[in-house]
Image 1 (cartoon, chains in turn purple, blue):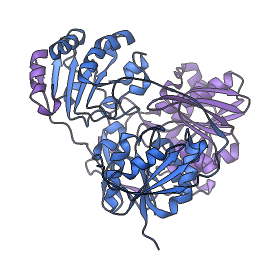
Image 2 (image 1 turned 90 degrees about the vertical axis):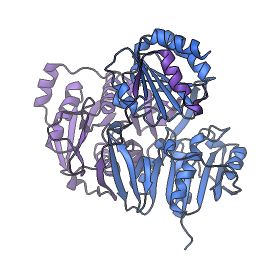
Image 3 (image 1 turned 120 degrees about the vertical axis):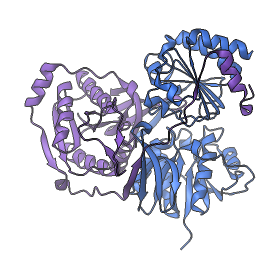
Length: 250
Length: 313
């Protein structure tokens, strides 16, 4: 069984992005980019299933420009067998991403598609569910544990009241939560070897899928900041300040 | 042609409607068209009747079927698709329930989805946050059907006093490739995080799961507060994931938020910055949490929290 893992290139977790002066978009020129953290969990889980003998091949796919080769090389260095870059000059929204991934699924026929539960740039959290919808596959989002027996995948899902377990008949789509695993560190020799691997490049136009979105970003802005507060010097002072708020009834 | 309406996907636990549904009903009034509420489940007559008494609800669409007892995204999606042509807007309060389902619905309808809208504006325009709340993005949709989740705490709670008609509809056959197996619900005597008036969150400085409970529980008991945690505290195993507040956890907006030993990473403040009053107690005077706190106390939490609890008692 093949596993397809979708990998998004995003602004690194530790970087606070700024809004461009004209408010047209965020300014990410020259900023450090990385693999979306949840996608790293997805890659790791695919590799573990392969190491358990439950999968034969792990294919990483990313959508973007030639710059996305770095995140694909990262996936290869972690241990992915193959990498596909779907080249697109324009940024693509979740529904378009799902349509592109569907086209790749139809070509590569994976038994399992793993994605991160959300990307830390747009925070949409939609692509996995949308892909499952387009393929009419079963889905399990926010996975914190996965076990595969025969053709049935048991997935523990994180919810707001605890966890639940669902059983999916493959092929299926699963989105990874951070607690799914601890992604392995990439060793330098592996990164060197990954540089030599060939990345299959597909032009998005060749997938003959409509990736235009009817959702347009009009502007971006800084969120309002909370008005500055005060420092108190003791628990007593804190309590007297809080007791001045009648609604708290302390 | 009949007037198009707004549909709310209502979350419930089989016994009660989620508090977030009341916020979604308020958000849905924006379009000035009739608001229907979809209740899907098994043996959910009481919930449907409850929903019918909320002010601002035109009709309750009730789908009761044995296989909906533990609703899965595939079944709820297929159910919504049987009635979606009547609606110009399909929305829900943003939660792990709705964000699992509505993207599937949107893709089936071939429309974009707007996740966690903070604000609804004229001309199908929405404000939502991106980059963990660092940036606000204003987006406009020209799709024929708007599918969205809304940031519940930004919308008031709908009042009672309605008398909506309940329409029973038939659910499609079960989607058999996904089976619900089991659940593990964390039972707590404390109020729910999303509806508590007071939330106390602990960070990694608590040091252990034992300390987390030992230090924060008495204060939570006294203030009838819900307990939250930072991702760092959850990852360190000090607190269960269900109580994680932040970008990848829950968003809360209580009257009082007390951050204890919380550094204040942007991923955490995303989930609490709508709180009315924020108190931060941290030993590090430079911790970013103080920038979002109304009252900051630089102190050793292991001394300050017991002292605060004692002073309240």
